[in-house]
Structures are given as structure tokens and as C-alpha cells.
Length: 400
Image 1 (tube, rainbow, N blue to C red):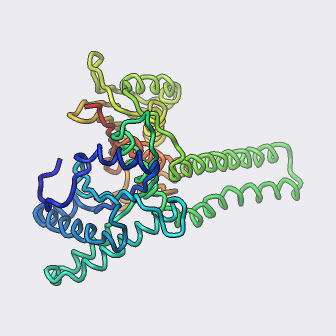
Image 2 (image 1 turned 180 degrees about the horizontal axis):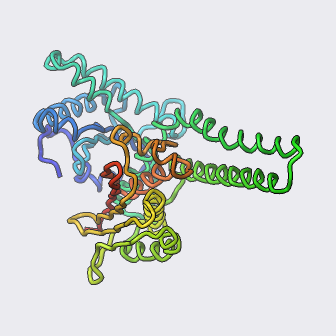
């Protein structure tokens, strides 16, 4: 938890579960808003932790002082003391002229709060000489939102945990939704153009049987590519709209990995790939996770490792027990990721210049993988050197 660096009139969320449970029971439905400084680690690294704490304290004060102006006095304001970059607002009040809260009103409230905080940050005299830094911080302010409902069978801590996860997914959905139309149209156009062109050739040209079979195979492969793309888009759409349910429970990560290895063994063997395991048979690696979603994460990462490793290459799968989480990594000896393309690796439809020349793909696998990891409260990152290999790491929380 955070050190108590804030004023006494601000409440930490962990101290108020009973209050939240009481208010939720009385109202049945609450709006949940989370505002955070997304580049908090960068700010601490560049400008010291003391400076960051000072900035966060200012933002906390600005947010709190919007009570009675942007949000109402009966709404509840908290600091998330499990993260040092996040503030929480529980909207108890209903919007004017509305019978109940909805996602649209929550989004409007979040946008207005962010806008007010940003504009007021630039009016603080103490920050006049560091406007570039303040702009960087203001630009990194993000928001997430969702609606939470009373459930007498569910512990309030679980309700709040689910709200954090759902609001994060909602945040990512809003960030990326504006980009999806142009990207989808481009990605769909490519296989459709090929299908149309080769179909026209078969219809219009006097071809022999071998040529027809050749062009028909191209059409089949492009249609299959189109089918994979549509399925990936549907999966991603469900994740972004928070329509995917995570069945979180204690699972054995080692057992899931062994099941995936057995499933993918024919593909690994056919590629003449050597497989190394870096985990102990006698050690238990338990995490709080969704078994099926975790299996999909591991399948995606191993599939990429096989796809981009040379014949005779090596893949290493490892697990480590950490204090509050389980770390999993998949390491390959493949083509690697160019330095100037690393920042784009989790973007929709993005494929590195090297990977495009090696195999076809949708450019959505890692995006989906990232959503699946973060939707379970984990983190994902990678290390890579071109022509040496890539290691993807992800964590899942433990039940502590």
C-alpha cells in the first residue's frame, strides 16, 4: 500500500469496503469511475518519486474539489491505495432527467472530470516553469468506467475487483474504437481483392485444369485468411466491450502449460523445434486465473515462437513463483523484433516488416493476448533482439 502522503480528508478505498457495501445495497446500482496517470512510472523515473507524489497530490485535490460542481456531494471519492496512480469515484446520484445510470452518462462524467483536471493543472502558479512536464502528465490522464450492481451472494471486495477489471477493458475499448474502422477496411480489402481477382481469372480465361486448381487453392487460402481475421475481430470486439466473462479461480499454471505442449507437440515436432522446460516438477505454481483464457494466452505465445523460429531452433517455457504473482515466459531463438518497431508490437493489425515476409497473420494475436492477460489482473511485456530471439513474459496474481 501507499505511504500516507495525502490529506486526511481523502479516503482510501481499502478502508471503506463496508461503506461501499452499505451504499450499494441501498442503491442497488452505482457508477464506477477510475482516473489514473498512465505514465506514472516514467514520471517517477525521470523526475523523482517525490515530484510524482506532489503532482498526484495536486491532482487528488483537484478531483476532490470538483465535488458539488462536476459530481454531487453524495457521490463517493476514494484513493486506490493498491496503486499509486489511481483515483476512484462511485456515482451514487442519478443523472438529471434520467431514471438510472448508463454507460453513456458515465463516459460523459469521466470526460468532464478529466477535462477539468487538465485545465486546472495549467493554472497552478507553482507549475508555470514546467509546463512541458505538466502537459506530458495531463496527456497521460486516462479513465475507465463501468456499472456495478448489488449481489448479496458476492463479497464487496470481489465486486470492486471486477469493477477495476471491467473499467480497464472499457478504457481500452474507448481508446481503440476510433482506429478500428480504417484498420478493418484495409485488412479486409486485401484478401477480398485477391479472391475477386483470381475468381475473375477463372471465369474469364481459358485455363487448363492445373491452373484452375492453382488459382482455386489461392482463393481457398485467402478465404481462410479472411475467416481467421473475422474470428479474431469478433474475439477482440467481445473483449473490448467487456462481454467476455472471466471465471477466476485457483489454477495450476504448470498443468495448463503441459496441456498446451501436448496439444501443440505435432506442430513443434514438424518444425524441428527443440523444447526446453524451466520449471520444477515438484513445485506447485498456483495463480488466480481463468483456465481457458490462460490456455489461449500460452497457445498464442508458443504458436508465435514456433512460427518465427528457424528450423532446428529452440523454444524455452518457464514459470517462476513470485511473492504475489506467478511469472510465465516463452523464449525463442527466432527472428526477433526490430528496435524501431517494438513500441508498436501490441497495436491492432501491426506486423513487423520481418514477420510479414515469413508468414501470414492477422496482426491481432498479441492484442488479444494482452487483453486476456490484463483482464485477469496480470501484466505482459517482452524482450527481443533482432536475429537472436524474443522472450514474452506475463504475470498472473496469486491468492494471498
